Length: 276
Image (cartoon, one colour):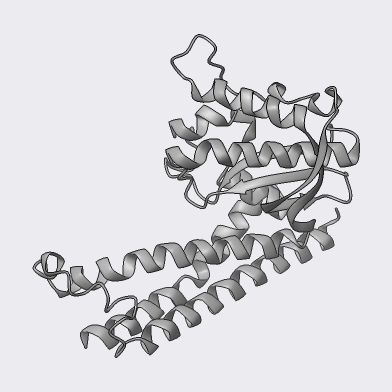
């Protein structure tokens, strides 16, 4: 890629980040301002907690708003990442095709070995665990469709990326096994359809590192079911989505430049609810 293309690509990424933050700040503000007199509004439904109220009006307000801010900001980042990825990849959010009973049986057995941490048959996950799965003996076949967070196809290299994204990385006990099962089945469907596995990679991804950028990912529930090579944490996620080694820096820099719009929106909401 020459300098002109690199600059154009960076400008396009920055524009998408800026647009995402602008739209989010405006929408978040409009939503909560419209609910000021609504007893069932997001904030009003929470401000009658007398135990929180005893800590002061500011604490009461921010505790009511925090959950809404956290979840809606996560949704915005997910959509923004998809829009950025569309600059570089063909994008789909589902995988559909043939999968064989032998493959689903093998996946179930493999996941049980991951889960059974105290058993003699326990296994730590590696990417070699499922390599060659499309070459297994195949008899009973059926078609299956899986919704996917991100299914990216790089038309230049022919690589296919299946990504399970958890914005902050939380993966609770009930979901860890099912998330890995779903993405392994997607892997099988793609491998069966393509007739090969060498152009498919699966990832568990996060938009930021809850342990600090550049530090090892420690969440035991994730590492119980996902190999280190399957982790796409923070900068590695954004670099892949942007298809640039500078992707994370570009996204974060532009987000920081635009973040004042969200701060201003929060100030408007606070004034409307607290009169300050």
